[in-house]
Image 1: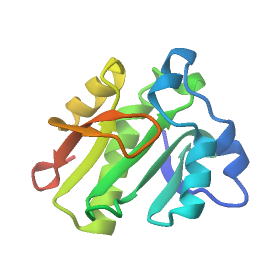
Image 2: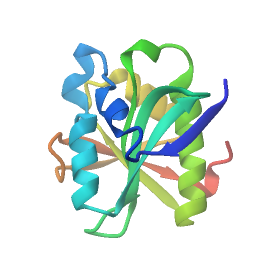
Image 3: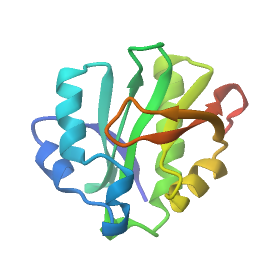
Image 4: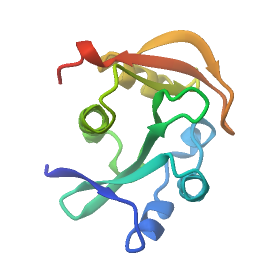
Length: 154
């Protein structure tokens, strides 16, 4: 595997928009098309396409919350055709390290729907813990998880 993050831009945004999660995962995450539109009007969000070599396998969006300046991994998805192949954990680790470099922050947040057991398991494996807070700032309401980046050494 040669895993890289590339900006979502004029040459790949249609391919990113075409990525899909499994049918049972649809209620757990906003669509990539919605995320692309959101980032056009909220420039605090950075979109990245997840590649294995030249093969597009997923999408993520991260940035700084306008409300309180906290740093969030706001979207993360692997296309249904590539799920179960070891991409998720590796890409989450790459993205976390990228976020650490860019924002030089101590904490990273995300939100997850409680029924999304696979995502919760993934995030807990890399060190995220539930905060007890609810994120109701997006279309899909989720439970907040936080990663202490000072203790993160992947």
